[in-house]
Length: 91
Image (tube, rainbow, N blue to C red):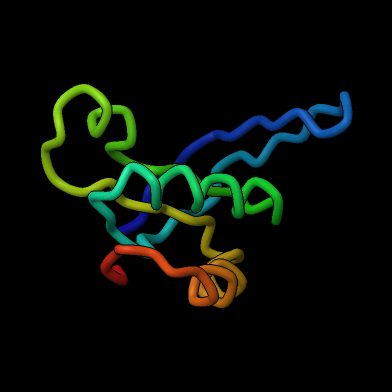
C-alpha cells in the first residue's frame, strides 16, 4: 500500500518541498514514547515521513500508529531504527 503526501519543511529558513513522494509502511506501535523517539531520530536524519494515526493515539488509543516513510528513505530508516530499543512491530 502506498500513500501520497505533500510535505513542506523549513530547513534553516529555506523552504524545501517534496511533492508526490511514495510512502511505504515501515512499522506499527502503540507506544507514545516510541512515537516521540522515532520522530526525534527521523527529524535529525532529515527523513521524509509521517505517522498515520498519531493524533488519534493522544485522543483515544484505538489501534496502532503507523510509520510511513518515503520509499527512497526506507533502507536508512530501518537501519537507524534497528539500533533503538522500541516496542513496535515491523510493518
